[in-house]
Image (cartoon, rainbow, N blue to C red; front, side, top):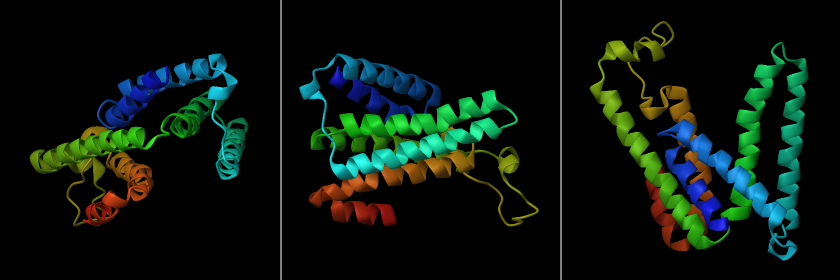
Length: 195
């Protein structure tokens, strides 16, 4: 079951910017399988966390609970609940899946390759969209009053330039620590990311 969960994580990492709905479905399948794996696995198979990892987990879950309290102050509690579950809940779930299932260097390297490949495809498609779509169609994302010299923005497969920037920032945050773990890739990665 661990292998299936890892493949769902790979699929989520690859499909997230390309087909977000399918990525969400894969992530949901990974969550369900991880819960089943936890409930039905032997105690010896459950990994023990270091003190530092436990502290980070406690802080993240404290943030999750604290942010969930804003639902009670919302004018639209159902919408806020869904938004919290989709944004914060998914983030916490991804953290847990990564912590428990992306454990070996081989799995981490495959995850790194899948995530970077998806990012490259997304950027290439974004460049195609940026250069191939008439300026008239990209005007909806440009505030001409605030930025008179700005004529277009790149949004790629994410349909929103802000989401594109967020995705690339998250990709850098997720893959940088993995790359820096491996001595052979360190100089190449630093050069590539600074380009």
